[in-house]
Structure formats: structure tokens, C-alpha cells
Image 1: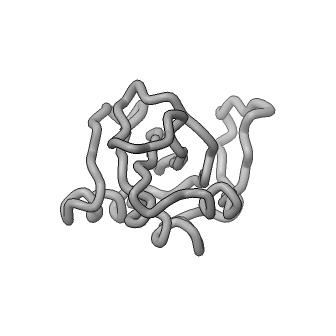
Image 2 (image 1 turned 90 degrees about the horizontal axis):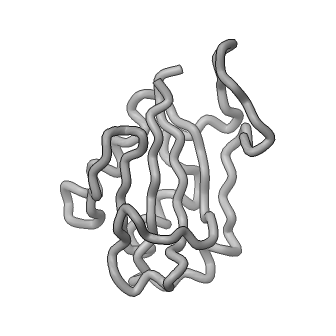
Length: 125
């Protein structure tokens, strides 16, 4: 499958500053699977200065952004999200595989607009 597995987390330390690749993850706010163009929205946030790319090679890529920039895009329906995830016959699926888009609105509601969130995107090609 060509696409991305994207997860948005709070930072365990409260998110007073931008996340780093080694930042400890807090509560998961959202997780979803997308198609090939599933990171365009995040790339646009980076271009406009509303998010920071922390690099990576797709296994994974890391980003950080304030909740006030990120959550309005993610809460209704994450961009390019597959409601039910796809898998290929050769994929190894474990009990940790959610299999559907999940948005934790209660966790999102606890975020302050200036709280820095952590985004992890895994290449699924």
C-alpha cells in the first residue's frame, strides 16, 4: 500500500517548547492512515511557518506544531484519512493495529493552543 500512517501525540513534558525526535510521547490525540498524498497538509503547515519538520527518512518522519495550528485541521476528519484502513496480503498485522481512524476529542480538548504537539508519520510503501 502506498501511503502514510500518521499519529499526533501530546508531549509527555507538557509541550511548552517544540518537540524533538527523541521527545517522550504523551496521550495520543489522533491516528489515521492515508494515501500517497497524505502529508501535503503538513508540508503546507511547514511552508507557512505553522509547523516544523524535524526530519526523518519516512521510517518515520517527525513534525511538531502548536495545537492551535494542528488541531483545527485534524479534529473534524484528519486529512486524506481512510476511515477503515487498508492492508496488503503480505502485511503482518498485530493486536496493536487499530485498523480505523481514531480521534480522541477528550485528549484534544485538554490542549492549550500554544501547546506543542508531536506528529509521527510512517511511510507505508
